[in-house]
Length: 125
Figure 1 (cartoon, rainbow, N blue to C red):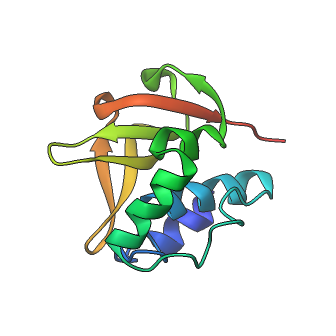
Figure 2: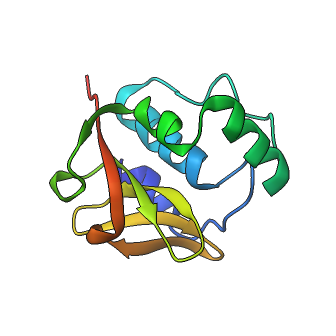
C-alpha cells in the first residue's frame, strides 16, 4: 500500500486512468491481489462515460462495497475505502491513517476523515 501511495502521490487525476474509482480499486488490488475493477477497466475515458458506467454499476456505493464490509467512517484504518461528501460531488478515497487520499489535479489530495459519509474495511487476506 505504501508503494502505491508513493507512486501515485504526484499522479494527476485522469478519467479512466487515475480517478477516484480506479484509485480505490488499485488500493484494494494492492492489498488483496484482487482487482475489483477488472471487468470495467478501459471502458471509459471521459466524465460522461464514467457517469454512464457508474449508473450501470449501481453508483459509487456499489463500487466501494466490493472492497469489503461497511464500517463507521471514523473507524477506518489505513487502506480502507471511504465515500466522501465534497461541496460539489461525492467521491471515493483511500484512508491513509489520519486523512483520506483522493486523486486531484496534481496528485493525491489529503481530505479530513470526518468528510466521509460511508466507509468499507478492505478484506485483507
